[in-house]
Length: 84
Image (cartoon, rainbow, N blue to C red; front, side):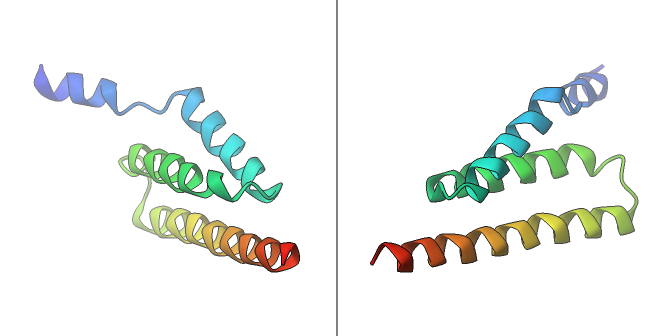
């Protein structure tokens, strides 16, 4: 019964996907303070999905989240230099 409860807690709900996409959209619009939320929501989504992914899919998913984080950090740095 305990394992059944933990599996129910780890289900991916639409809010997980929506929160990740909203954070990504806000970061791409230039809101640097949303980068932490993007990483948190993206990693939570990957953690929940990792039980259903194959190893290759998991590696690609992590690479995508890391790529988005690098792109967002570069965009934030560019915005900071433009303000100066």
